Image (cartoon, rainbow, N blue to C red):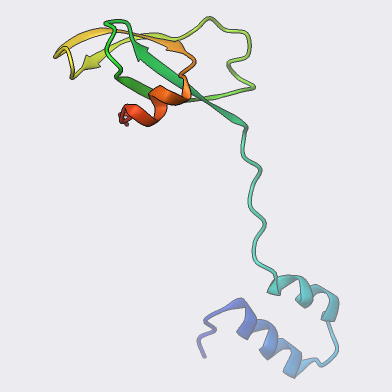
Length: 102
């Protein structure tokens, strides 16, 4: 006989030995607990060419605490060139006006 799930296994064992492992079987019906996630901070990489184009980057707060600001050379489709993108705060107006790149 093939046992397909844990619930069926414990149901079968309870028929053979009624009253055994009652407390242990109650914990099996709960969904598994999710692991804790590291707090991440959203950083915006804004084009140094002056266009309103930006990239979004997520950093782990604990790992990158106190580091210098990120600066990467990436493609800016408005200027159609690779330009330097620097980590800066983005105002709410720019967030709604410009479409973010992924």
